Length: 189
Image (cartoon, rainbow, N blue to C red; front, side):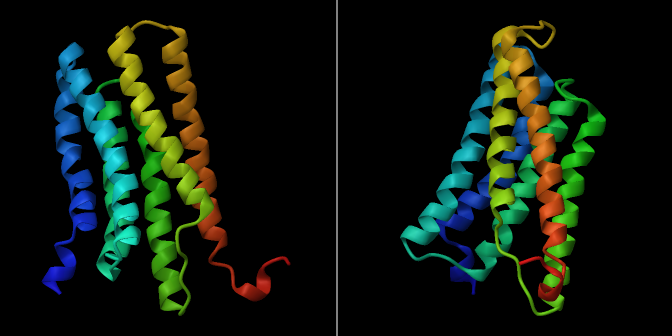
């Protein structure tokens, strides 16, 4: 059992969770160097999200633990990243609830489906949500780094637009998972 936990994909997944405090510290410091460090952390976190699944599939290192740990790590990292962005004044604090709400709802949907003998794997809406959220996090940090968070430039407006797109896709993804709860007989053909 312990050998299954100590795989490269699981280490990459764990790294994503461990990057959250570093991102908080970097965004909390402000300044060019700290924002550059925050950008590097965000990019590294997104790379680990891509790499853990690829390594697991390519080298046949998939495990039940990894399948459960990866979505949890994604939720912890991205919720933590949005909270850090809010604490740094780059997004509204209340907007973080959108991201946390979706992840809590999806976790309970998965539990409900498991109890009823069904399961729901990763859905297209969830994959799209992860991509848009990751791009938005990186764009917000990049905009703050290149313009300072007080200027209203094309870059900051673009980052803000990506953020709100991420919020919309997140709500859509949450609803998609909720709809997966319907019994098969209730679904339209």
